[in-house]
Image 1 (cartoon, rainbow, N blue to C red):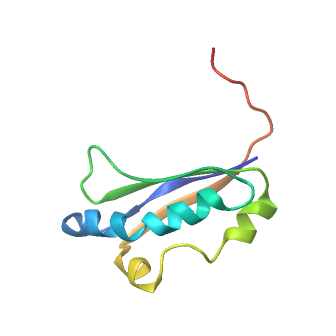
Image 2 (image 1 turned 30 degrees about the vertical axis):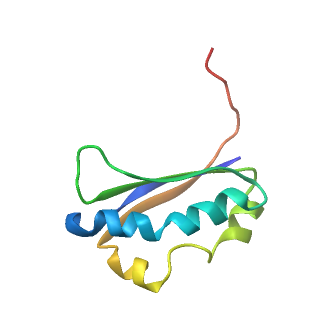
Length: 95
């Protein structure tokens, strides 16, 4: 399993428009083979921060989906980013 997690920073006054523009990407990702979870959400404390969380079955699934992310207009709205991939060796469900 691969987890992609982090955040991007956008103009606080444009965050809602940015997120609205990402709806189709979230739908595409969730329909993509190997996607277990995909979420872009507004941070509850920082008005310019958008939290990214993705869970994929494999690195191959992540790479197959790459390029389907935000369009150039959305990418231009990103002021800063901190996102990384994590390889998961084991999963322990909470009980």
